[in-house]
Length: 343
Image (cartoon, rainbow, N blue to C red):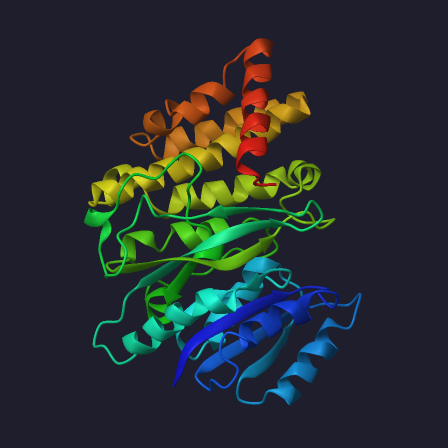
């Protein structure tokens, strides 16, 4: 039995995937209960596929190379989940890495849970924005939100700050829970990590938080999906993901745990805010129509949720229907960008 499966989606990742893989192996070099799935998502421009096979030969029984036609990040996450043998499932992007010291207590806890009749559903650690080219880093922790040193439920959770969200980087899910809910991410689409950390939450009954800087999130690589110009170009995919989240669950009516419902409402508010900001940023009539349509979609499909999201502070500020309002909303976005270092 494998304690945890680490899935690494790789698409033309030859330059940096070794750093990611080595960082996972260094968490416990002699462990045999760790599984690493290198998911080659149809790479053709470099030697990602050959490198994945080489790693499998070097670490048989620990590393497996999975090859598939190109289907996007979500497709690679899906394939990793379908092939995972670990009790727990963790996605690590190929340009990111894990901190071996931070992983020691987390791995010890996961191993302990494997012998329990009801293992913890969700294990959480901190993540760090690593702006390597600037030589800066920003730690995102949850000390004010989650109890430490024990398992807990949603009723024990504190208040999230405006800058605090659970990202794919910070979560480790119990694999069987993801299978049980039939989680499947859209293919040929970026930003599906938002679905990964949003849709399973109502099914999570037990949580454990470690105040350690587990995940190192590389920011600043050319061509990265969170690059502002690229986000502008891929705004239709952002809208697609936001609509999928709207369709998946209505936290205002379907989530009985009030603290969780409030968090999910805030998360969806953030997603709607991103859509609004980038659609207004372009200034084209076509994108203004798209902005109106995504709000109409929310109103039509989730009429009780709509006023909660529309009247949130984030969306009041970024959807003021005047040129001055547009300038104000974009100014707020760029201020938040500087403060929170998110791209």
